[in-house]
Amino acid sequence: MDELCANLNSWRGDINPCSVALAPHLTTMLKIPPVFALATLTSLVALAPQPSVAAPAAIVRAPFGTMPDGKVATLYTLRNTRGGQVQITNYGATVTALRVPDKNGVRGDVVLGFDTLQGYLNGDAYFGAIVGRYGNRIAKGRFTLDGKNYTLATNNAPNHLHGGVRGFDKRLWNAKPLMLKEGPALELTLFSPNGQEGYPGNLNVRVRYVWRNDNALKIDYRAVTDAPTVINLTQHSYFNLKGAGLGTILDHQLRLNADRYTPIDPTSIPFGELAPVAATPFDFRQFHAIGALINEDNTQLKNGQGYDHNFVLNRQGGGLRLAATVREATSGREMRVYTTEPGVQFYSGNFLNGVKGKYGRVYPRRSGFCLETQHFPDSPNRPNFPSATLRPGQTYRQTTVYEFSTR
Ligand code: GAL
Image 1 (tube, rainbow, N blue to C red):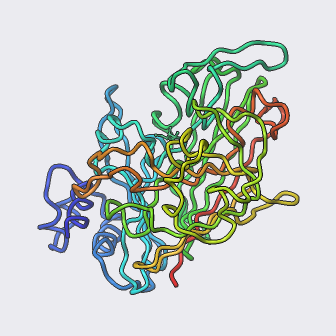
Image 2: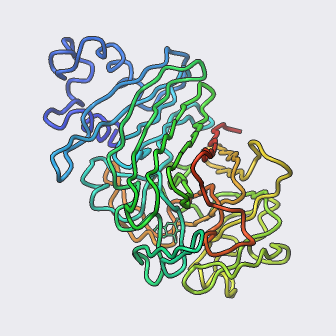
């Protein structure tokens, strides 16, 4: 019930929707346009744990909070025909909640996050956000492109991380809801001017989230530039298939479609080598628990303080390929990750430290994991890695799908 109430409260801060959610005159009480009223009512009901039933897809918008500059962030609730829900705010193009059924058909929220915009403004863990312009690290915040040197913030000393001091995760995006055949969608756009956070080139970015009717979140990325630049966009949701804030992820079973990974130095920068996972704790080619070997006496695990490594995905040619499958036994939930990208950063939530998230639940160390599909870390300084350079006339494209089911 806490989960339900906390979410209802986020719809309108000035009333307690828990007491009015099912009351008559919803339109007046919630001060929302009548056109949204029916969708709002059905969405509120859908937030309650209940078996999945077929229903019309819906998109509902509500204010999410005010930014320090006075601009108001919006929260979009996308409900698909199966009653699965994704909530996304245009602050950071952030997924704040994702509700999918367990094996008994009871929906639960499987991503970590905050109830309010303030949580995201204060937070530093990139919960649910789109990170960019360059997700992951660039060594010492320096790179050279076409003979020109660029210097970026070393916001994760001594390196640059996730786009800098104010990356795409901390920006207010423009958002446009769309009702597509595949399911409800939200298209977010952002203009990143030349020189922002030290990156060259005016960049126009479009991220389209499609909450498919088969409970799969498809994320399509596009970007164009007017000068050579580097780009590496990714999605930074922390998942816990038992439910956000319901324990650690050490018991989740993981399979990664990767024969190799990129070992890192103690500052988390790859050495450049693509090392075999065979006979190491990084061999997830068969399902095993994330926690099974995480505390082994292993230099790479020490350097990452757990798993915090880029895996080189096995792939021949382009297109969407299965990168990872995660299973959690008590809920019966399974998540499959498909991507067009060459790599995935598997991060086992090592730096989570008990921050208070949604529904008053705390997130201790390793209570969420990320599977950030991406180009490899520090690619701008590693000519042997797939290139992260984008030039005028080219279009950056990336697609990743997080697909949910039960077993
Ligand atoms: C991950 C990164 C971690 C850590 C985390 C945010 O993407 O790999 O090292 O920085 O983001 O806390």
